Length: 332
Image (cartoon, rainbow, N blue to C red; front, side, top):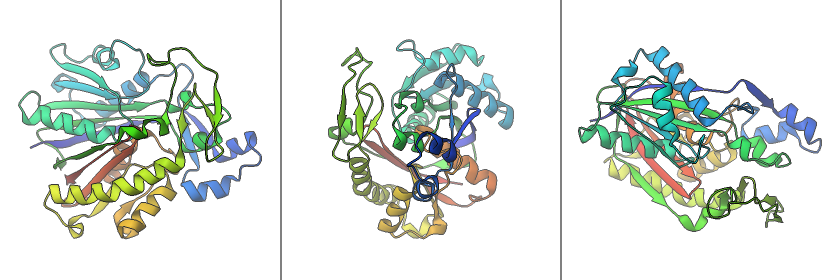
């Protein structure tokens, strides 16, 4: 068996409030937007602060808060779509920077909103196959570095953050069975099109999509309507499949903790699935959508505040860029 042993997270110092955005976009109603998306402020990485820097700070905080010894880490992996370098893997740099042993594994993997769940599944496989006892799973994104300054929609939603989780053969929450899904035909609905090998040079191309949003090819583009429709179709099915995989009923679930995309999307999902408010966690007011870090941040807050307690069964699910989705069960 495998467990979550410890969780910590790091938020950058710079904070951008809805009032700050209103100064740039006077036509933008901060109260109306906050009520809809559930976000009042978000943290932004400094200009010279990378995903690797933030992951390092999250990991150091975990070691300090949990008492876990860094010499006990057997594997480190980093989920990021904003790595420090094309190569080497940022996880390799972090192995040295964190003072971890050299006889361990380390790699990055490129996933977004479903990445924490994917990472947990890999960590569970390493532990239950006898290849590791303690896996340091890091998530870190600086999406705001990909967002065009005029893109008020995405600037309102996304925040930068990093989280650190140790998955071990002992811990506070037993990890259950996983369900995964992928729909690559929707890849261009959430994309940074230029800069990598397919389109290495900046294009400067700007187009207007069906929702009248300007798509800057050199920056992050999100087709909100398409992502919303994908989520409403995929997540209710995912929920049922995770229940079946783990031989559970809805009544067995104490709390649903899903990717904190935005309040409107989550409330719509909750209503479609017929889940009561008191069993469905929504809390992103001061951090925003932090991509792969939303789930570990939410879980850490649930544990610290006593929202989740011993004996509870929690379903977690991530969904988004890829397009991809994944879910599992945690038994506390």
